[in-house]
Image 1 (tube, rainbow, N blue to C red):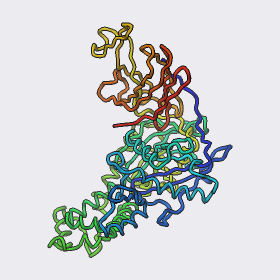
Image 2 (cartoon, rainbow, N blue to C red):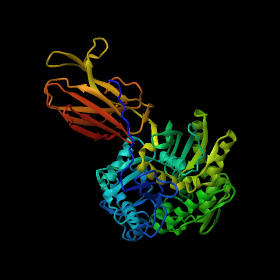
Image 3 (spheres, rainbow, N blue to C red):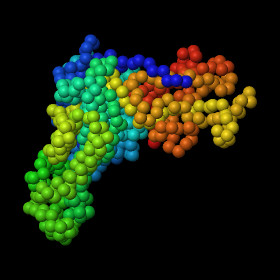
Image 4 (tube, rainbow, N blue to C red):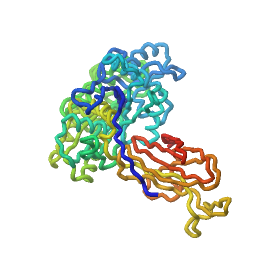
Length: 551
């Protein structure tokens, strides 16, 4: 019953690798045409997005527009422009920052279609002979997302028509791993084999902190995960929420709600906030241009000047300056009350990771929020500990470019740590006094077995070589079982005895046909960004399932 590890390289044979990074705030794509022989050159072979449907270039906003029946209308900047028209008729549903809602709300997978169309058109401008079936598709996901949230992305890809295109499933890339790969392969990190470094992926929604080591893998310079990714939902949009909450407290619910319905003014305010939080340097006051609806007296007899003064008096003389339509926020207040809580969470968490991993020599800042001056300044404090802080060129592109490298050669990620203990439900000979009587089953031959025993394939925290498989043989319990069902489970605990214990979740089932009285069945788990389970009978018939995570 010992695990058998089978070698795997995983280098793609696709004509093109295309990656999409659906960020909380912005979405981008990148692509490459892998050479038949040799490796992709990170500096010259990876291309980033050209023009979106609205004519913009670079990242587009992660905005989704649906009609009143939840049918897809538009995505990105085009959705923003389209909604301005629909809003006049009070129709349409407008979602911003919807990535963080993917696992809590039913949002159609069609949100991927327009970005995919834009990407495919850009690829075909480079090579007209490339069709969708020639492309290996890669989607990025935060490392700290649970398996259920990752499953939502996979299902959205299926809705968009990506799964099983050209016989290949869409591949998920973990965001900090992708950023790490990009920095490792484009020459921005001067590392030796065995050097360890922290990747701080600073996005709009989540912050991922993980530890990697540069090693010599089968694919050349590769990375090995040394600590499970930690983090939380303290991305840069938490700053947006604090600023908007302050405006709501100042001007009141009625004015604030009216402003959110004034699409043009609300969007302009959001742009102001985005610029302010990135450019803020701790010393310069911040000026926001307020929408007319936020200052209107249609909804209240209190003038905006009186509202600002009342807020100041209630909050210890903040020294806000209001000159219609501008609101000046003093640098000290903006830093201490609006932006610092987020920076402090990131700093404190990174410090804890560094303290647990004293051999780390580098700290990489990736993601669009890594452009923030105040965040960079705070992270630079770690250099006093002898840790070199690296901010790659265009940090907002590191994830999507690295995802292309990963899609071209998954073997660049040599080892990961398992986030869960995975196993299957089995039976074992019943031992009186050891096994609970409630689990006793007796076969047609009178043999006594204990049912629902958790047979572990992978243990939480175990080092797993990417693409390798764990294989175990099992035998049918009764003669002529026409179909054998294998139930797959997971748990956050290392030691699991029974499948019905607290915290054990059934995440999938694979069934295989049996033709002989008693037959051996091999159960295999393939370790990738997801877990793929297979059952194979003695005739070589195979059944496979990508585990459905139903948390």
